[in-house]
Image (cartoon, rainbow, N blue to C red):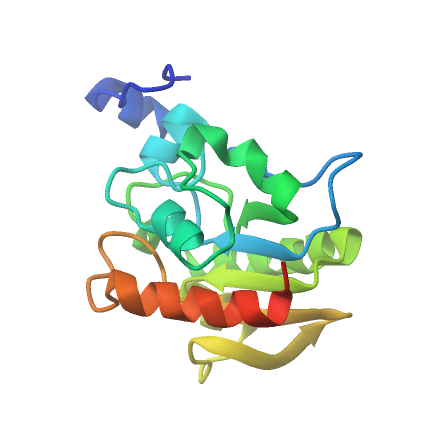
Length: 189
């Protein structure tokens, strides 16, 4: 793993290709899981560092804070603090790639099945998938739009959020904050 505070170099990024990173889930003594955020898959910076949404320019951490989910802006290396807020992170597909479009539809569909199992085990109040395309493919919902979905996974409500990647330029940070805040309003906390 790349030390905290240093970005991986080109060789470290290439070695991170195909790696997986652990989910961030509550442990004993943590509050119940209110929202499980699900990214598409780890990027190479995340895989090299072991931290979700670690690429500079990814808006996940600032948007999470500005929408009121966290009391302060967390750094990716502080991801374990999410459990104390009743929050968690996983990925639809576990394999690290430079871009999400390197994944196959089969990987996303398999990830959707794994996600159903994870939700069944941890029973969050809400599952928040960050990435409309990945959600549509994984869950066979070609007409899904950002926001609350009609679908439920057991007792868990499903919400689709815009992808916070810096590559998703058609969603402004302010619009993302507003959408995350809509989720927070129904998820409590």
